[in-house]
Length: 258
Image (tube, rainbow, N blue to C red):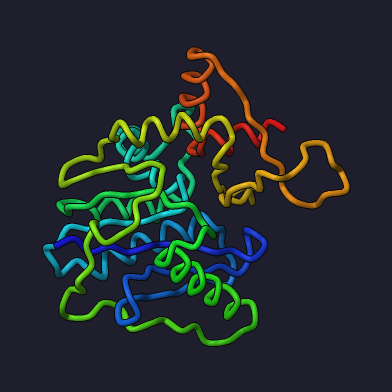
């Protein structure tokens, strides 16, 4: 059986009061947070807690994320960072290394794969995780108790990968050994580097999709704007290499240059 869960994070202000949540169904979910953290930490903690909650099971796991940062960390970047002593190519320490090290331990020997889903697009599991992560962040903001959820029950729910609507996007797959990247995931990152699916980062940028209807140079419009950047093959390779070196998504790197 495959247990399917959505994992999501939320930060009010990014950084600010923050929450995380994973959601399988109404009987199997959990949430938590901090008084001050980033959205990326929430996204990573949600995945980490899901692996910990299912550590007693031998089922395959399908983790749905709307954060390319999390997917890239697990399926692409962590092996290289780990081999360098959890440092980037320039010797600088990797961001969120404490959570990444715990996640590296939690996924060892597990059968799992990650799949990107579009946030705030009506995907049932993603929306449920998002609501709970934001509720946790708001609880910390208001000084209230967080609804931590029931956790994971003794028996696995009847969820399967086949029952989940497959989005048109990346499906980064990994099993047992060191993470590997599927062709679909690689092509997804290539598409993402054009700015069509912005990432999220510790710099306060959002990983939510930009509105396609926005006008590029309408300075009176407060909404975010989608910008498409066309790169040749050499420029694209350099972009990916620098992004990996800095531990951010290609979208984050491009946005940091503006």
